[in-house]
Each structure stands twice: as C-alpha cells, then as structure tokens.
Image 1 (spheres, rainbow, N blue to C red):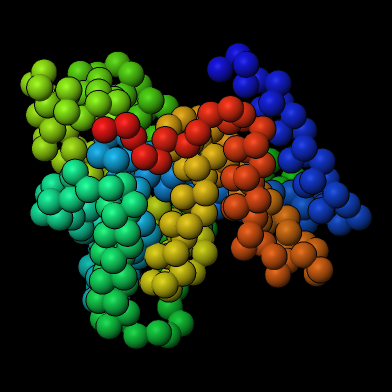
Image 2: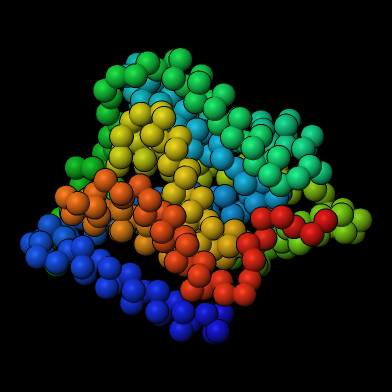
Length: 317
C-alpha cells in the first residue's frame, strides 16, 4: 500500500486540478452544490462497486444484473406506496425482493456455471439483467414517476451549502458499508472462507469450506446492496427502470478502479466518478461527454495505481 501512496497523491492532485478547471469562473455556491451532488451519486457508484467486488472475490462472478435487481426493487416500493402501504414496509419489501432475486440466481443458475469461464459467467448475469428489465418494463410502462424519501425534506448547512439528509445518508452508508465489509472479510471466519474461495476454489473445497453456504452469503450481501442502491438511485436520479438498471456501468468502472479487489480504491474511484460527472455538466461544451467519465477515471487510476499488475478478471484455476 505504501508504494501506491505517491501515485494516489498524484491522482488526487490531478483530479483536483481537473475539477478546478471545470469549475473555473463559476459561482462558488453553485460549484459546492454540484460537488455535494456528485459525492452523493459517486458514493452510490462506490457502493454498487463494493457489492460487485464482494461477490466477485467470493464467486468469481462479475454481476451485471445488480442494477436491474435494484430497479425492480424500487419500482415495487413505489407501487406499494401508491397502493397506500407504509413507506418503511415498502422499502423493506424492496430490499427483500432485490435480495431474493440475487439469491435466486446465486442458488439456481450460478452453481451450474461455477466451472465455466469468467466471461461466460459475466455474460450470463447480463442475460439475467435483461430478463429482469424486461419484466419490470412490462409491469411498469414508461411514464413520468417520482420516488421520494422523507429525508429529502430534511437538510443542514455546511459552509453555507444546503445538504439534504438523503445525500448525506448515501455517503455515510457507503462509508459504513466499506468499513463493515472490510472488517467482516478480515476478522470473521466466514470472511476468511470468502477470501479463501477467491484465491483457490478447489483447495478451499478440499479443506472443508462449505462453498454453497459461503457463496449464498455473498449473493445475499450483493442483493441487499443492490436493493439499497436502487432505492437511492430512484430518489436521487430518476425513477426509470432502464436508467437505474444501467447505473451498474459506472459501478463496474468503480470496481475496476479497485482491480475488483481493493474496497478503498473502489470508494476513491466511485467518488471521483460522481464528482467529475457532476462538474462536467457545468461546461456547455463538455456536458455531453459526461457519460465517459467513469471510464476516464478507471483508465487513469489503472495507469497510475496498478502499474505492473493485472486485473484478476480470470483467476488461475
């Protein structure tokens, strides 16, 4: 880690310079609001990336379906609220539904692909995402909807900037999840088994690691994270199934920033992507290219921080 610090410092200085150029000449309060908004969205990218990394480290599956699971969850929550169900109950059902979709794939389909090439396993999750998206779009036709949380009406001020509790909650939840999962992986027996599976699946099975149980826990954690990010994306971006489904793309870019391994680098990558995307909208000439920001950040981080190392997309079997 120490060897990376100079490159991490260079990356952060470079990002600050780019953000300064994009914000040049704009009113400071406006820039502050865009930075806060970018941090909130970026924290959700990072949270989605953390879910992908946890699942990949345990099962070897890069899950393209997490966005679709979250989309179906938040659409269900919205529908239940329209029917008069209480908000906390609808949110809980959304989380349970996303978790159930993840566990269903993890217990029924994933074991049958366990020994296939990682690319095949990733493409299979893409097919699952399209199936879920198709069902969601069939159930909820395209029209304007909004999903709001009570915390949208609560706010506090930091250096004169109004920060809603929803945005603060997104950032705080991401930090808590990153720390919690790191402790879980490093300090618990199940976390040790997850890391063992990531390093050597066959050997782990031989020494008695219960692969199906450990992988089920990983799929459950990934589904719960997908459900939470879906609720937050529905509130902070737009309640539209296709948009929320493809929010998995910047999350994958954030995961790649951490080489599908480092939770800390996933957090840095996700926040960077969110802030850069937000500040690019300040420039009339550059706002149309904001969609490439996730991959620009991922490429720069890989070049600076992963020198001489490869992304372990395909493990040695």
